[in-house]
Amino acid sequence: MSFAEVVLGAFLVIGHNVFHIVPNEVPFFFALFWISFGIRERGWKLPGLSLPRSWGKTLLWAGGAVIVLLVGSEFVVQPLAHHFWPQAEHVSSVIKKEGGWKNVLLSLAIVWGFAGFGEELSYRGYLLNRAADLGDRSRLAYVLAMFYVAILFGVGHWYKGSAGVVDSTFSGLVLGTTYLLTGRNLWAPILAHGMADTVAVIFFAMGWAN
Image 1 (cartoon, helix red, strand yellow):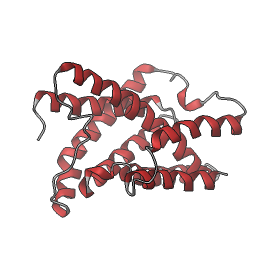
Image 2: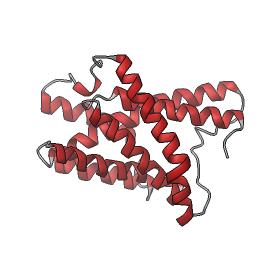
Image 3: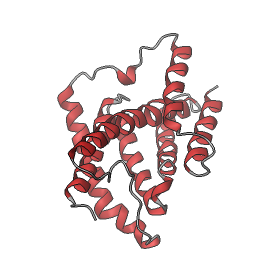
């Protein structure tokens, strides 16, 4: 069952983002998340969404992840990726939306709801755990699943171009590592994802982005 879900997940990501033959994968993953856990656990009490023991530590983890995301992307990953693929990286129309603060607020609502919560629940909360099932959820299985899902996360940003896929894969590695190091609780990667995208939205709104 887990193998079938992993294959289906790869099909949805590649089918939507590369070949454009299926709708966006996130709503599918959201539905599969609840159905799969409901069947397996016979209920929907999900440890990944339980409140963390310490919000302070969770915020510190999220803040640290944001720093690694932004600094690593800006000074290491993007320069290296653009060395091999010099084409300009495309940016989501949600992040670079123009037209005043109403659109900025709308963009923030989208990146927190769809990207921060939706993508983390989909990729880290659902697909990573299903991939780890294939290795009996051992530590090694979770690490390998994290790398696999990070690659799919990169492919999920195919519209950015080759350099953008590499950059998003790096983001997937950072968010996946944060998820595992915080006891597979989703709140730290959700907050990190939302905060990183918030920085991007503000930079574009203020005209500071390249």
